[in-house]
Image 1: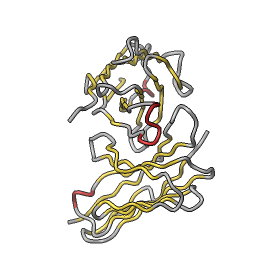
Image 2: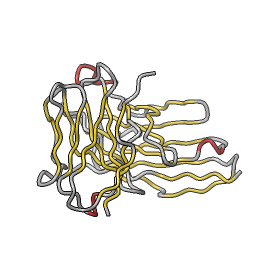
Image 3: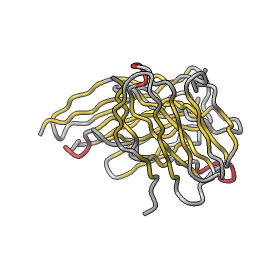
Image 4: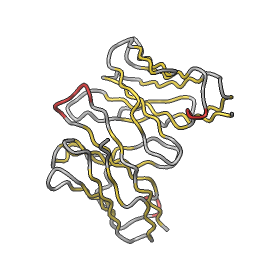
Length: 117
Length: 112
């Protein structure tokens, strides 16, 4: 069964350092999402891509976070500089996309657990 | 922005007891999805409800969407230890972006 891949699975960094997370969605999925999940909370959408275009980044702290999906396939989320409050699980998800409005199941990857010291 | 409120936050049951979690919104929802996240795991899609008053069943799980499309519930009959995890509802309010807003989830623990 196809899965969303993410790396690394765990990342420990010091504040003010730069970190990057990678996501490879399920093949053929046009929509890709990055979520942040704080312990005990539900996932919060950071950015949503449709193919290579950003369609929603309203909750992305743009002063320190950036995301790209240059070829409309895999994606990178970067934080620079990292702050203590960025410690969380970063989840990537993908779905078939706009052509399948009634079946927008999101498939989540295993996540990257970030700890900022 | 759109919010979905989920209650209870925690629920501890004895194995064999039933469990219900509720999801409420102040606005009409386009549809609602339910996800399960095992401890240390990632959210896994369970089901999507689209129609007003819709009821769907998956073995011991029953999902309902309210008539006004502002609330939903997940009911588990005769819980088992494998049901342990956090159950999230996630809702869309329509629009072209199909943005999901997740509730805070209900953590279910089951005592064997």
